[in-house]
Amino acid sequence: MNILALETSCDDTAAAIVEDGRKVLSNIIHSQNELHAQYGGVIPEMAARRHIEVINTCIDEALQQAGDMTLEDIDCFAATLGPGLAGSLLIGANTAKMLSVMTGKPFHGVHHLYAHVCSNYLNSELSPPFLCLLISGGHTQLLAVNQDHQMNILGESLDDAVGEAYDKIARLMDLGFPGGPALDKLSTDGDPRRFPLPSATTKAPFDFSFSGLKTAALRTYEQATQGLDPEKDVETLLTIKRDMAASFQFTVVETLFKKTLACAKMHHLNTIAIAGGVSANRGVRKRFMDFAAQQPDYRIYIPNLGFCTDNAAMVASSAYYNPITDDLGREVFSRDGGEVTTVRIINRQSF
Ligand code: KG4
Ligand code: ZN
Image 1: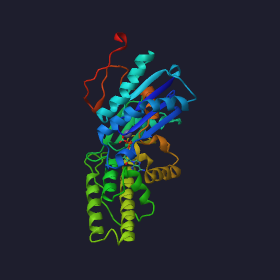
Image 2 (image 1 turned 120 degrees about the vertical axis):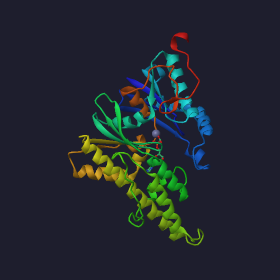
Image 3 (image 1 turned 180 degrees about the horizontal axis):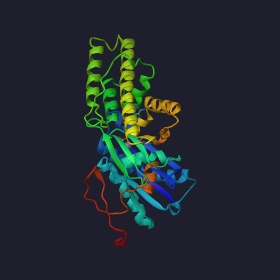
């Protein structure tokens, strides 16, 4: 089954074609980073407009990359329905619904977080049950995935998501947008022990809390750089930034690793998958892969770098394994549980 999927939940316009939920035939991503970098964050209205401008090109490129396919070669159309930015979601969802109506092929609506989990199925042989650590810009969760690909939340962040904390610290240090990858890169040459930072304990053992760490990092950085002149003290400032990046990354990675491992032990799951934009982080990847190399009883799965941040191949996989709907009338939603738009697409019969 060839699924053509679209992903427009935030600021990346993506189209992909995946065969049987696993084999990636094409994966096209038009990043809007350049557009939003000048504002230091995503401007929802601009993101939606850019999706409109490039979505058709993305679809054409996805068909072409998959070996000059046509719409006739596609068996099902899919798109992310939420959570995400309502205006952005509408572009991908309505385009996929319209392709479904035009061709008479089914439409599958997908949950963005399930899709991140499914990025681990792409070009891989992973099968459930497994534990998934989902670390993105909006969510930090530990999920148990059962044989039927159903997902049960075992723990989650009580405040900031990991990616959000990365982005905020990076903004403070003027590292540009998006901040996570820049902070990750900077950390490689820093001293992770120079600035000891707290790791929060939570009432429920598998929940997370990053706001205390974020505040401590902000305060420590402000103290360390107090009185320094950005023009004259360039080297000193750069060293402080490197050491702060390394210290922050060290604390985050240890917290994620220890909680995930404890959760895996408690729930007798020795297959662990990592997903979401922060799974691209070098520190995270190294910590888990080093562990897997020493502990052959555990199997660790981390998506290829191209499938970590938002992409449509993971949406196609999720449309195959665990779509949330095949109803063309199902609306997009910006948050879990809350459907937001009043646009209802006509059903196929009345078209
Ligand atoms: O999954 P994603 O593309 O979008 C959401 O669903 O949120 O994740 C984006 C997040 C951003 O916060 C970004 O800064 C972070 O993932 N990120 C990273 C890295 N690459 C992306 N954070 C730390 N290290 C990275 N290498
Ligand atoms: Zn995402």
